[in-house]
Length: 385
Image (cartoon, rainbow, N blue to C red; front, side, top):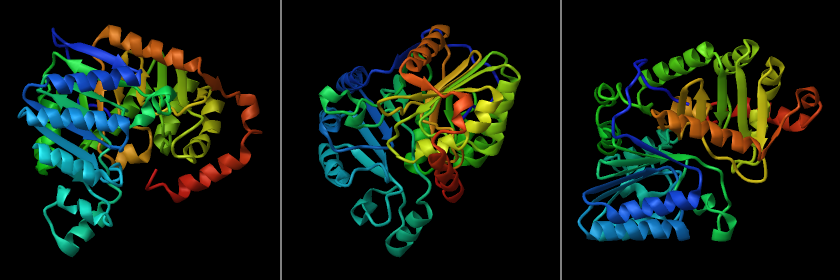
């Protein structure tokens, strides 16, 4: 999970509003309504864009906005773009929207013309091949430079309840208004226009929005994360979809628990990537021995990414794994309002009621083969997970 590149405390803007979403219907209904009411611009950046009933609603709203002469830009990751995304892109382009794909998969030649890279032919193929492990995992909708929506929701029906043809994934997002959103605009433009990352990063320090698109930012953010864990005095409450910590993060969490900090980690029992719970379980023994409490969310996919350390809390797209810490573009937000932090903590406690706590005494005798396989996968796929 990434951190801000500064230790300075930011006073909340006087008109700041933060609305936390855990209900997918409410989240997407309000997004579509905001798109319909947009007056100037819409920037949408997302990792996964499926072709389903929900995405059709979003696309239709974007098309109508473009026809109203709203400046619409859509940026999708190459892995997350559905196989027939090019058909969706053509609809948007015809209406006047702009569409780009972040690092299309090299063999999806039909998507090359939408790539951010201006290279051609073999040069483009080699560039995309070399960039195949670098993904845009951010989820952002920026409307009129006045409201921002970010978190773990993709444009996918999977997040909706089953009665709406979804899979009822558990996610968290936030809508932010009444605050300077220029940092989000700069970060989006840097990706869209391929600006110099080092120069851009200089403008993104004093903001509650958290970015990780330069090597220096990643190093600094990881350092700050470890510092926060090491200095925690009350609680560390983690909700994460893909928990594959490195050695230093694992030891920091274990030591915090040894010191008496209330360390609770909420992870999925069921994942959209079937082997992720196996990989995560490889680390459970060390944490349980330290006194940390591990809960597994039951019956549906847990896809949310939130973190609470004492009075500091964030919502975003970052996972506690190597992908987020080293490879993927991520976007998180540090909550500024006390009531928002309380709401996120309450939501965490509610989720525990839908979860099963692992018993430290019985863990060593449970799921032995899954844990062995998980350890092997962590070793073999270290660069990818």
